[in-house]
Length: 100
Image: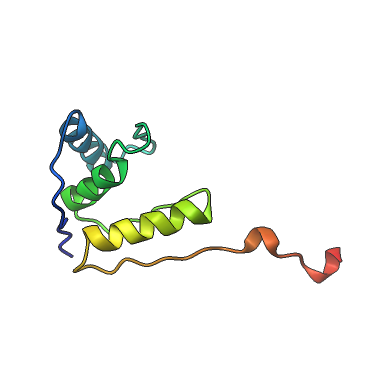
């Protein structure tokens, strides 16, 4: 696979360092890493650049449907030549008949 970010954005501030460190952690096999940033600081772009750097299929998990839809749209734009899929689980709405 060849992941190539298509964007007019350029790395700014600490993004380059974050991309390098987080990508190195993925290659090293670090189990847990955190990318922190305020709203609008470019976290999604940074994640896209990390995906491009490590060149691996990636699963992004979101805690709500609104953010999941936003991430899907942005990743579709960042990776127009790659498959970007969207799935929302309705598990929290499912109630087995045994509990009715």
